[in-house]
Image 1 (cartoon, rainbow, N blue to C red):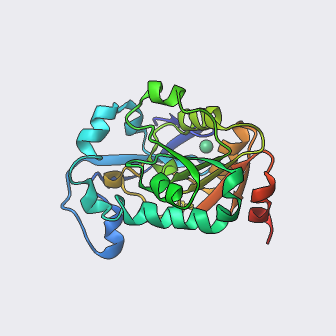
Image 2 (cartoon, rainbow, N blue to C red):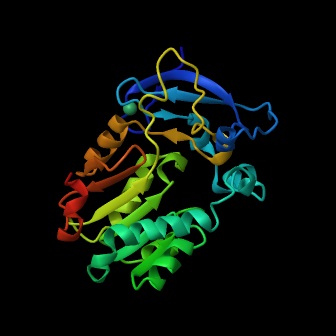
Length: 250
Ligand SMILES: [Zn+2]
């Protein structure tokens, strides 16, 4: 039986299930794309419960552009251009806005820059950076930040360690916060059941699904603690700056 190395913890893992490439998040709204006939296999790590599709680790940026982030991507993620980034900016401003003068913010995976633009209009210092397609020249000139947001990024990356190494380089010091969103698979992906959770969606580029355990393991590798604000919003941190301490208070 073929084994795969868990992309988070390195544990030897087995195939878990297969879904059609056109499985998309819009299925939660009753919108189904026709089957493409391209089976995407997912592996589930029995140690940390990370569920991922190994196929994509061999893809180039151009493959992702051709097959996923193409002109029809908007059909499976209709609000991604404006509505979602504006909502996320408002959420960040409602949590941290009072302390914005103490914060140098980077929106990692910021796409078209709407979120950062919105925060700047609220008086923040905010920079947008998208790691896709890879752009080392831009990355090296960015500087460092004490608040890095990454909305709907973690489930899109084929190699979580490449992402974390990049984010780590962008953090200004030990008292910085990574504020990110990704839905936890806990209770949604279960041994002995088919992979039918709506968030497992190759067509949306959802190729790596985290459990609370896999996120904690990932953070630990970089000396960071995990705190989940809810099942979809989390922070990584080493030491919390004063303006973020209330995030871990009940
Ligand atoms: Zn693992």
